[in-house]
Length: 146
Picture 1: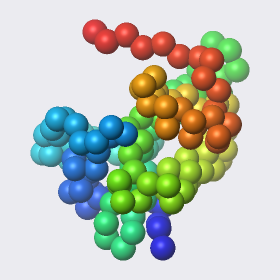
Picture 2: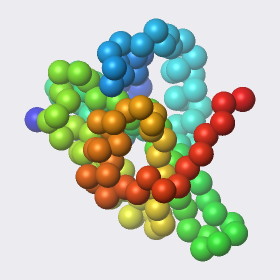
Picture 3: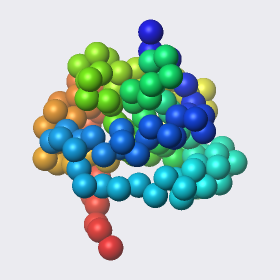
Picture 4: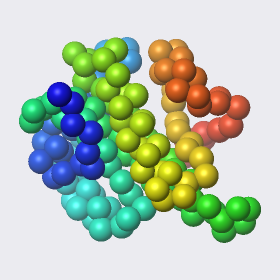
């Protein structure tokens, strides 16, 4: 049984490997594990940074990070930005991603969030199809690397 929860420090031990798993295989991305734990501890003190884990027994099988942005101009309602959604390769196509997104959406509703924005590689056709199936619209969003 998969447990969807807010990330705990122990989940981080498996996160570098999970994060390196991409839709096209394993990337060359490396994670500074010590720095990751320090950032997690620092950001966890701020209620606007939330991390979600999907765990099967003690195995991290999914992860996503989110930031709550506060709009001061238009409706003054919070907006969630999702980043780093990953699902363990052995657990894909088992509704883990959907479970993580549902967990986040329910949390957002409780916080009065107006909408969720997420980033996705335009070449990741599977993820684009997945997000569209969940009702996400692809009309907004630009990215520039600095």
